[in-house]
Length: 100
Ligand SMILES: [Zn+2]
Image 1 (cartoon, rainbow, N blue to C red):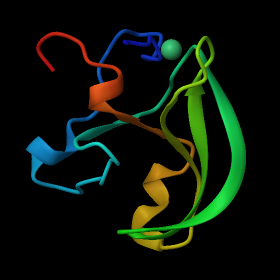
Image 2 (cartoon, rainbow, N blue to C red; image 1 turned 180 degrees about the vertical axis):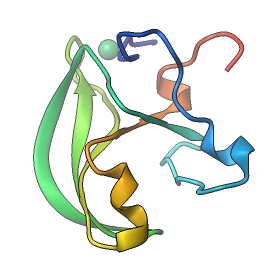
Image 3 (cartoon, rainbow, N blue to C red; image 1 turned 45 degrees about the horizontal axis):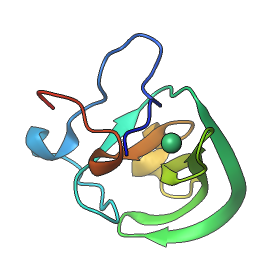
């Protein structure tokens, strides 16, 4: 099943793995960083230890079917990760589009 949480501009997120930079560890493989998503509900904030350090995150779910699609970074504790605050991670397998 596909969902439609892509940002309003229609642009895809930064393809981090192919940039040779930070590689988010989506639970199901490659994931994307977005500045905005739509058609989702945001869950409860919680502190989570990720590969890149401790973050406060909230799961984001499809507003139609409630499947978890990724998470939002509410707060990063490490200075080098601050750029992710307020951004969203979506797992590719959940929101696949052609030519991604
Ligand atoms: Zn859905």
